[in-house]
Length: 369
Ligand SMILES: [Fe+2]
Image: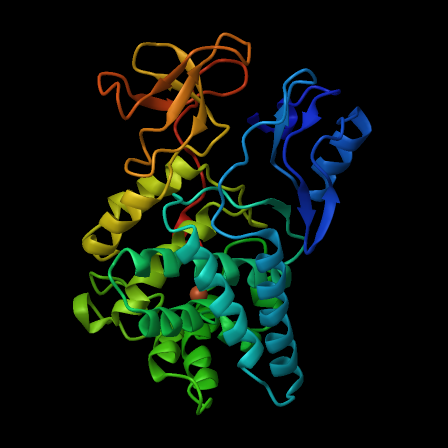
């Protein structure tokens, strides 16, 4: 099974992993992709899909941080909370808390699983993005929290803060949220206020630990003091917000946005790595690098030997050194464990025509809060 950019999928290829549109299953795995279907997927905004050859057997289950059912329920809980808040109705945090508990249980149960690309999903608008982004940031923050040694109670507070970190966006005008081009200085200021709005909203909940409200308040603060809204630095920033900041940036970069395509995982991992000690807490970045796979299962990569290989399994102890299958165009090719064969390493991904991928040219990642 291989993750292939949509434009390079040949008609007749078999879908290797189900596709989702918002909260619905759009296409189940195993379906043959006709030219018409491929066109439709491009119109819907899909950028890449998992495919397998028609004669290739069902691949191994690709490990994931969350089940699709938990994702669906959690995003529904955030959606309900946000929609009621917008209309000025009384809001109840209990369904969100139940969703956070479920996310926490699953991430704890899959604790050995290195973070993997989530389900492939087209997100139709900014609203839908907010719900799904919230769930992924919650799961990633909790994963980082577990491996930073937080206890169960701290993880629940972190999970609530991460799930609701962007809730202040309900008070940002749609015209600013949805704007495609660059923001004016005034619009940027309006956008940045989502942190303060979020804090004000969340601190009104008597049943919510105030540290969760501070995650919303501080998730755009940066270790070197370059963030907002209060330009806090270093350990002045609450630890939970430092964890959520890394999860937030990684998820935003690897998501497709109206103003830029999704970054491949290895580029987003490199971006976080480069920010260690500057934008981000170096300890959090260390934890992140030890848990997040720069080359998810299904990525075609180039080795330092010049060979092309397909990532088939992740090594829990070394996410940058997965088990690969040296590629000769057939599924039966030899497997190579890069955690054992330390003399070989991945130098980068390969584009479908066999050429190594060129340097990244994505728009400035910090361009949107
Ligand atoms: Fe934010």
